Structures are given as C-alpha cells and as structure tokens.
Image 1 (tube, helix red, strand yellow):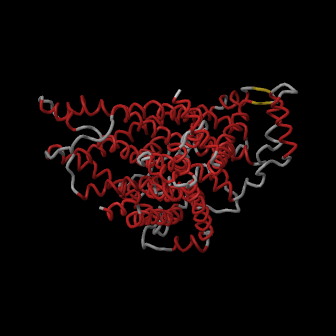
Image 2 (cartoon, one colour):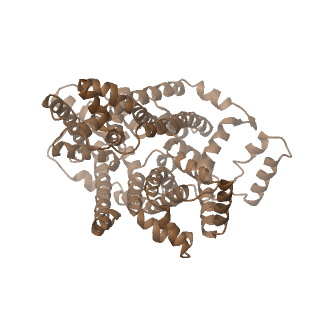
Image 3 (cartoon, helix red, strand yellow):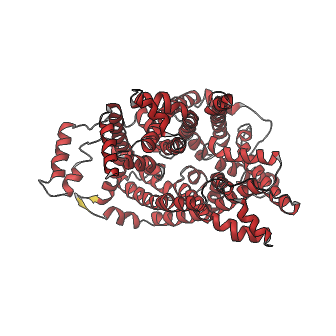
Length: 599
C-alpha cells in the first residue's frame, strides 16, 4: 500500500516537471532512432526476404566457406586472447596489490595501463610488423630471418593480448584490493604456504571476477576490426568478413545477416558478463578491506615476479615507442639511416594531413561534450529518478557497449542511407504481414507523411559521424556517472527542490558540480575514443571527410608503414596531451581539490 502510494507520488511529481518529461522523451527518441532502429533494420534485412519471413539470407551466408571459417577463426582467437589477457592481467594486478615493488615498477604499470586508452587501436599491429615481419628490425636485420611472417592467427592473438590485458589488469586490481587480508592471513597462521593460500583462498574469491575479465576481453577481441584488418592477412574474422562483404561484394543483405550473427554472439556474452558474473563478483567481494594488507617482501617471491612484470611492461612500451621511431626511417625495410622527418612533412604537404587532423579533431570535439552531458543526464535519471521507462533508457544506452562497431556501421548504412521511414525500408514490413493489419496502415501512413524519409540528409554528412561517436562512447560515460551519483546523498538535491528549484536548475547547479570529475573524465574519454575510432567509421565516412584512423589504415594496407607511423604518432600526441590536460584540470579545479581546501 505504502509502496503504491510512493510510486503514485513519484509519477505525480514527474508529470508536474515539464523539463524532466521533455528530457525523458528526447532521450527515448534518440536511443530508439540511433541504437535500436539500426539493429532492427539489420534483423528485418536478415529475416525478411522476397516479401516474407525467410531464413534464406542466413542459409546463403552459412553456405559460404569463408563465413563459416570466419566464425571458427573469430571464436578461436577470442577464446585464446581472453585466457592470455586475463592471466597476464592477473599477474600484473597481483604484483601491484600484494607484492612490495619499487616506485619505478609502479610507474611502469601506470604507463602500461594508460597506453591502450590514448593510442589508436592498431598501433601494436604496426609495431609487430615493423619489428617481427619479413622486413622487421629484429627478425631480418638482427636475427637474419627472412621467411618469417607475423600475419595470421598468432599475429592477431599476440597483438590483441597486448592490447587488452591492461583492461583485465585494471579490473582485477580493484577486486584484489577489496579482498579482506584477514582471510588470507588466517590461512597463513594455520601453516599454509603462499601458493596454497593463493589457490585455496584468493583464487576462489576471484573466480567470478576472472570470468568477468575473460568475457569482457572475449567480447573486445571478437568485435575488434582494426588489428585483424592490418595483421590478419588471409586469416578472416567476422568483423573483417562483414567489412569485405559490404565493400568488396556489395552484398548489403548478406553483410546484414553476418552482422546479426556477430551481434548475437556478443549480446549473449555481454548478457552473461553483465547480469550474472558482475552480480556474482559484487556478492563475493563486498565493500573495502577491513585494514591494510601486509605486502609480500620475501626476495624469493618479489624478485622473479617483479622482473617478469617489468620485462613485459618494457616490451609493451617498446612496441608503442616503435611507432614514432618507425616514422623517422627514410625507407622502411631497406634503409634505416639517417633518421629523417620527411614523413611528418609529407603528412601535411602531400597527403592532406591538415584536413585529416582538422576533420577528426573538430568532429571529436563536437561529440565529446554531447556525450559527456548525455551520459550525466542518463546517469541522473537512472540513479535519482523513478519512472517506468528508466530500465529502457539504462538498458539501451548500455547496449552500444555490446554492439561491435562493424555491426553498428552496417546498421547505419541500411537504416539511414534513405532516411528513417523511407520507402526502401518499410515495404518489407508491409509485405511481411497480411493486408489491412495495423502494421501495414502505419507503414503506409509514415511513408505518405515522409516520402523521402526522416533525417534523409543525415547519411554521408558530418552529423552521422558525430552520432556514431556519441553512441559508441555513451556506455563508458554512463557507467562512470552512475558510480559517482550513487555516492551523493539525495537529501542534498531535495533541499534544493524544497527551495523551489526545478529539475534543470537542480541538475545544473547542484548535481553536475558534485560530479564534475566524472563529467570531465567522460568528456576526455569520449574525445579520445572518438578521435581513435575506426570500426564503425570506416563504413560510414565519405570522401568529403578525411579521418586520421582511416588514413592510417589505408597507408598500412598499402605497406607505407613509415607514413602510417607518422600519422599515428601525431594522433598519440594529441590523445596523450588531452589526458594530461584533463588530469591537470581535475587537479586544480576538480572536486578533490575543493575537498582538500575545505579540510
């Protein structure tokens, strides 16, 4: 009874706030049109053929040897990359949390954890080719190996493992810190060795978290487009096969069916990771440790583990340093001296570098604040408001995390090439059901109202690129905002409401200032993710726009590695500078600064 009255009161308060209602309607419309609609069009393309429900598109693609081989290749790579990344990430996390290490090693760990965030997704593929390829510095010029090839299965596995293990490291580090040390010390007091304590106490507590890290990496691996495209060679994966199906075979329906298969795999893994393993991890490790942990100081443990992790970290850093160094070589694979800056000059004088960096920078700069603000608004609605559509907004905004970029790109091509409610999209709905039914009437009415489709001019414009940037970065900012808002007591905002402020004023003057660290972090993260994106963008970009990542991919495919490295180096400088600037702003203007002053 009381719960029903409370819900009725919440609804009444919500309907009395037109700003809040309008915001919810706009958000639902945005999420429906730009996330659900493209995926729905893919499903329609796949299941509706010749005007009726049919599995002919799936029968056709599964009859293709290249596609069935690509599925097996993708799952095999994803499984191995998930295991390797989780194991290496656990090793790094364990050493940092449990082992007494020097400040230099701790600094190396921080650098390694940040590098994948600030670098383009295919940097390690370039480095692998330049170091270990047929004309590689190590293989050809140091070891004299001429028949070596890094392309294919092992090349993808190594590159993706090095790219994704920092994600596992960051996830598992937080989990290890939350394990109460008294549990392990009790086992030690009973005579158990450190190895037995790890296997019987620490590892069982971590198992849900390890499964979570594995699935996150597995999803990232099977959705990855850039690395298999550059270093995969003839080893097809689902992401590259979809891309070639739509750009090489011009088979949009076949590409849509392939995209649905990849989407089904990622959604299944995402559902297990999100709704089962995350909840199990939270139930196993609740709250913070009761007291500080005594770090392991025995040299028999610290020395081998520290050396192993330091060597791995140095190798990863060396791989990233190979990119700017490779941009200084006169002719890659033939002449390595004297070092020259000619490729950096040619980026801007011969290969339209100014336009590429301008277009990428401007589009990312526009999308970043939109993403950050949308993320905070969604987080605010999810945490602080009660209404029926709240679950829909949260689920759909997080859905983009599980949708591979290639799938989203194909969905946008099929959904927006003629606009929403365009005649090319809706007759298939009409033919799929009996004449005279509601769906037919609605489809016909929509076509009559909008013969050229709503948003008909969006395809091929800057707007669609900005929207893709926003959609791809939205889940990251939303998760950060939800975490920050759950730490704010609702009485702070309620006092502002009691003084007559509306929801917009409360959000802008009370809530947002309290979570400005999360807002700034989401702003820079969105900018970095946008300017380094490629998987969805490569399918949607037109000759009107030049984007850095597309240029890097194009030159790498042509074998112009020095030029690709020059573009990538400048891009890394831009992204790394953005992160440093954010840290500086948060240090002097963030909420943590204000708290220190109040103390």
